Image (cartoon, rainbow, N blue to C red):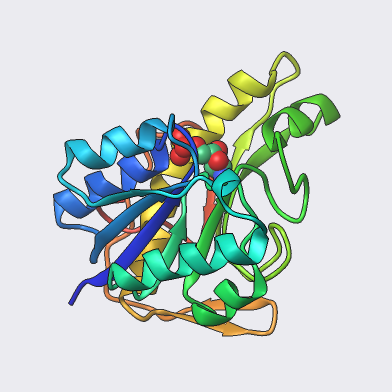
Length: 226
Ligand code: GRF
């Protein structure tokens, strides 16, 4: 069984690439039905095409208002046959109708340890604030920005000389591991939401070998292959 997912993107698509790679490895039990971008210049579209994936360009500026855009986006996602939606650097807030249509079936990744540093340029916010631990969060999406129940977080050291770029790079390395893992958990029916909390059903999986990684904290623990 593989979960059909639509991936929404706006930018470089490195998280999309990590998802594609884990699917092609046979580790992540999902298949991508469509990659939809609101930006024509998003390199994510080229990455998708390189792997033979269906793509759609839906520039938000071409629509009169947010609800018209959301309706078109929802139609594109639904028509692709997706049963879940993965936001991978998609720089738009989803409207209530979209969220309702895929409630508890939409994931987002944010480059900070939520609820700290929501919104734009989170890596620069964290570096500028002077935190000593930073990280990334995969969470379910609701109507509010960077708000839904958390699925997995990964923490990395933040150093005094870090700027947005250096800290962001360290965070990104773990984004590429935790996002495919979270999608796999969703795809295999192991996530359940209880208020603000997400529970992960156990599985008989060996834990990932983190010996090659930088010092980091990942909770819940990664599993083999991720
Ligand atoms: C990532 O930092 C992600 O956490 C944030 O947007 C960025 C997307 O990068 N939501 P990419 O397009 O996946 O390379």
